[in-house]
Image (cartoon, rainbow, N blue to C red; front, side):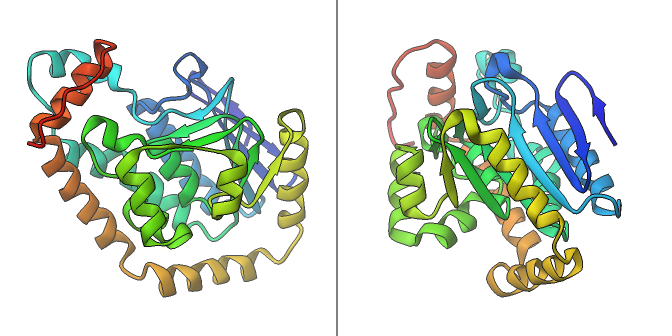
Length: 266
């Protein structure tokens, strides 16, 4: 199943399928092509009996910086904001659904920063192993948005409502050791050992009864997020509303112009 394209490297080693997001020049920020490649590959892996565990990681210095705002640069400069709800429904929602519903273990290997939607994608995975140089940032508030890609319900499930509120409201950077203490990641290893440790864990999982793991995952989903598609649709609605605020436009423009945003609360 090994394939390579401009944005996603797909490699299979025995029962382990590794998906490496490959836009290192922008810290693997998501564009439509990368999200489509993830959706297609995960859908194929779901029905491929030779795949028994999946690793999601990034190339270069980062896991993923989240949505690539530069691809929307011209529309924002014209003072127009694209429909963020529809963009989420079309590009992000299918990937999150695929990660949560594929009945095989999915490990996120955090080689660097996971910010915004990159953080949410990592948290949507079943397990997370982090380099000691990795960090997690709920960066949405910095551009006047809400946590998406499952962030509004998976983040509080992992760390509790009070701590999730603090992280989401402030956009504070959480380093690897703090992420481990909070329960955002399962394991932290030295950066130069991340690949080896991740593959060892993935092969261990791949050698276990895959069907039992898949059914366990289904049970967890039913118990903790029984209305998964409804929750994601509600996020899309919230994203649409947040995207229409003056603060969102200001946050994006400040990011593109490399200046501090001046939020007004509107």
